[in-house]
Image (cartoon, rainbow, N blue to C red):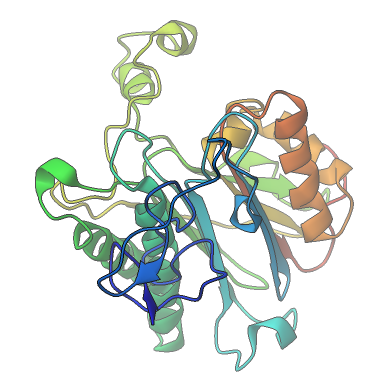
Length: 325
């Protein structure tokens, strides 16, 4: 039997990552191995081949997502998860179902960031779905998702000094009425308007980062803060070394048709403005998977300096294409 060297869960020989903890299984010296056996080594030339886990896509109900390693990083340390609330089979869910979606970005300076992101995405999305199915209101369900994800990521750490860490962004998107987002860190949620009767395109989250804190305290202008080498330093994250967080939760009434976009900083670093990002999403076409692919392609064409993950959830009554802004 093959086991993951990090969590001990059973894995298959062809797996590129552990589905339980998210640990990559094909890096040199840390591959899946028989219980009690030695780890597998990488290619003899030291070059890493691009693995299927480096690029993944999903489509669930009226949501779709794309995650890509990018062109500069050795591994994809982002993760995403999407479920349909109350659906026996996510893929067969209709447009009337509420969608639960999560995007996480592993903190590269922490050990096993891909494990943190993978764990947070799966456990957070499961908790969000369970609470919504149990009748919890959106804010309570999102809070529970943050706490579950934080607990499970913290459990990966052998000590606070060796703690995997990640950002966390979750959304509950009903077919009509207010949607909700909950987050820790700097992964972002954007509303993309698709109707003159809808709310204007907007950024729905605020970053837990040094630059955002400096601007919020009126100590620096946004331009000054952005130029600092500390600009992207996180002020909150999931992980045993942070000590627990309740995260932040916000609700938003879209007022009509459009799309909710969840993304890691591999996208928004290149196009932070909500109106410009909305134009990019609409340019991908009405299909959410095509829109997500378009966003990821945009990031890769501009250098692919970071992992990039984009989830697009359409709100019924329109498509990702529509009127500006």
